[in-house]
Amino acid sequence: MEKKLYKVLVNGESCHGGNMVWDLPKQLKNGKWKPGKWHKVDGAISVCERGLHLTTDPSQWLVGGCSIYEAEARGIKDWADNKCVCSSARLIKKVTFNTGVENSGEYNAGNRNAGYGNAGYGNAGNWNAGDGNAGDRNAGDWNASDYNNGFCNTQETPFYMFNKPCTAKRSDISFPDFFYFNLIEWVDYTEEEKTDAGKKSTGGYLKTYTYKEAWLKSFEKAGKEDIKKLLALPNFDYTVFEKLSGITEELIKDKLK
Image 1 (cartoon, rainbow, N blue to C red):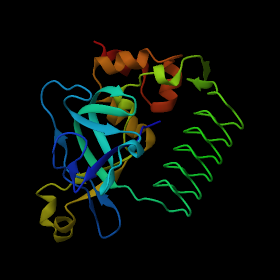
Image 2: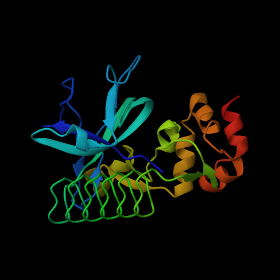
Image 3: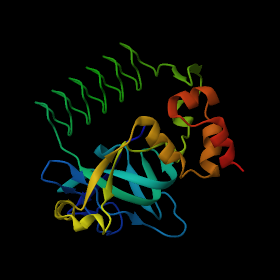
């Protein structure tokens, strides 16, 4: 599953080190968003030191007067807890805050949440789809621990990878960069296409990919290190992965040549 990445900014500028001014996404008349321009850092990058930094948990980086944007990254090199460093990134859209009621946290879709990013109700933790959780990222209810899809648990429950039980810890698994992709991207019209008045005014369009098309498109950009990460995943299975992504064993082995 794709990890959603975010950037917290104040007046379009970085607010946790550095003073970079980001190109902000623009909302079109039809309500859709045109992503901002790609920003790129050349040379060596290192988490917390140099590079473009994004997070999976913006709740930990909120400051007064800030705005939150969903972001897209290329060339992710490393992670430090919920923060990653990459060589290239852009902002996709501005994140809307609460749509529910009686939330003390922010950007919750459900009601009566004290945490952040909850779709359920009455959660003290963050990013829960279920209800009444004190832990984070639970799909079930009344869990004090994280990553549960059942009920009333105090410790992380086992999970499956490639259709088999997995004994590894979630925090120990390093997924390839090409696993993180979008099903929709903004495509600029060519100069020739812009001779049409309608196309010139919009500048481009949102292109939608099927799930497997998006997998293959992202895979095309993968390097050898990404392929090594893929093969090192717990329970990796060529057949299962092909059914999931449309990426064959032959395509994977060609990348290693």
